[in-house]
Amino acid sequence: MTENLDRFEPKWMSPPGDTILDVLEEKNWTQSEFAHRAGYTTKHVSQLIKGKASITEDTALRLERVLGGSVRFWLALEAEHREEVARAEENKRLESQIGWLKELPLSQMIKFGWIEKCTRKTDQVSECLKYFGVASVSVWRSKYPRPPDLASKFIGLIRLFPSMLF
Image (cartoon, rainbow, N blue to C red):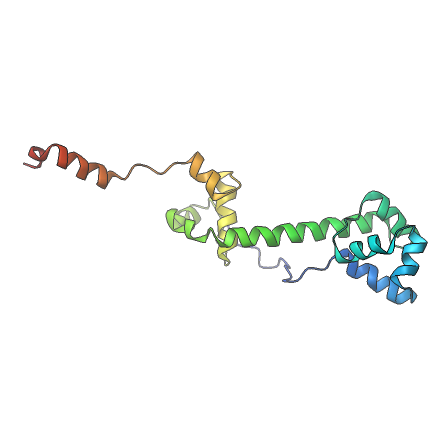
């Protein structure tokens, strides 16, 4: 298996509010004018633009009527933005779990084709979590507890039964 290098993954996020602002600029409307036409308060429009208020089905209908574009367009824009935000938050979380990769036989897992080799460590953590069918390293630890440390068990037995050495 090889990593898909053709996948476009920009390092920036564009909330739907940016598109709303672009259309308002094209129409030469203020946020107040748009709020009035859409039947919203200026505060709600401000929250939409900042991404603090989500584009719901009702909002998408109003955007379609007032600004253009389809309901599907506005809802897809919202869904993509929310996914980008969730992935950015997930990458921050995965960043703190990169050390876990050292606990796994990673090169063998890649060699046997169980997982894909990733260039970014956070992607590799995600790939391994998918392989094990768990959402996080903490869930993995609870599902797959580490085997007992045999060396410390052996030393403990020697202390209890020193005569076993000879």
